[in-house]
Length: 396
Image (cartoon, rainbow, N blue to C red; front, side, top):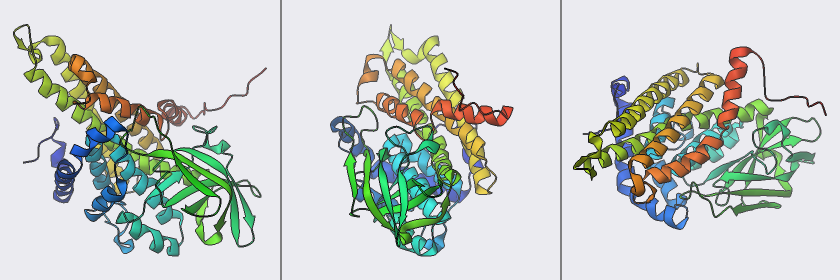
């Protein structure tokens, strides 16, 4: 029987199909992936996502919400969220792979691509036969994507791209990259599918990371990279289209972060029941109980936010601001639970034999990417006041 932290019986709000998906993903991860995480983290050798991706694809974990007509699962957004929660319960790098593939690569091709592009790429991405990445962040441009410097110049029957993208998940192994660049002629940001091996396109890994060590991250270099017109996403014009893709991934994070929080809580709870000090399990002491109660309360609130957001996404009513609130809140919950669980484990809390210190390091990346905590605060501040506070004219 499936067991997980569920104080408000949210499981009862899921459909039978959603519970079956959750159970199948949990069983698969426990059997095939969990044992690989510790070694990957110790050595900083990213998991073999070529192999794992195909297994994910086989059980319908990639492009979950993309229609079946493109050989994709055709499930709802709540199912996508459930999958993200389960994979991040194991490790954030796994959820990053699922969310990037689904929300940042498959979504823009489905939403803004041509029918030929959908039929060419989506089935292969869904099956894990090819790997994609999302090229937006640049060395000098992170939270302010409107200032991106990567350029696109129309040239004959194609485009010439120049620029560098950094901190890109799966950049070094990706077969295709959805790259965003500014058209030098009309000034608008446009999306392109850049394929491995195209002239002027290079990929490299970033190593020596203290976070997300089980996953790959890297840089994309475009030096007079020639991309045919057929690889331009025809409807991906303007910054809003790029940001809409981030909303998909942020939704996955909102669910995934709760998975990490749950694992930290359950690890700390089990440890506290077994660890004895002063003649009793440490779970018998008030201070430890208070920490556990605070963790459970925050997780429960985060679960309710994720579930409600999932239902809004299912019917197409979720707003970017609602997604921002969920990402902001639930990553804060995960950050709090990881830190608190590490405290409860004491000296053992820094051992990689236990998951909280790994989650703690990973969540620092999640706290920053797909919009920092501060950026989501400003998004919500703008929404509730009607005043944007992103930019200020400095009087020097």
